[in-house]
Amino acid sequence: MNAETETPQSTGSCCSPTGSCHDGATDAQSGRADAVTTVYQVKGMTCGHCEGAVSEEISEIAGVTSVTAVASTGLVTVTSKAPLAEDAVRAAVDEAGYELIGPAA
Image (cartoon, rainbow, N blue to C red; front, side, top):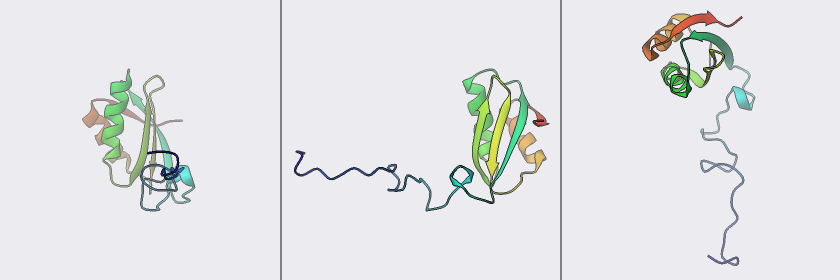
């Protein structure tokens, strides 16, 4: 393509011009008022692989919109559409091979 025939590029993501990868829905990071963010303490994570395993399992819980695990602190930040049952989070962390201590203080 030359400069005369190029079409301008969108400033959003590949998903939409607004940068959202969801059907216009918003989440906690973009201002959704009904999102719940909880930070949990998880024992046993030591590396990026651990972070990924924990994040993947927790992400499968219904209503979870984002998970960020940090091995160096043992903290896992979970954003969901509604409060999560701690038993569900514990089961997910156990499935990943780690131990949920509980909500971080």
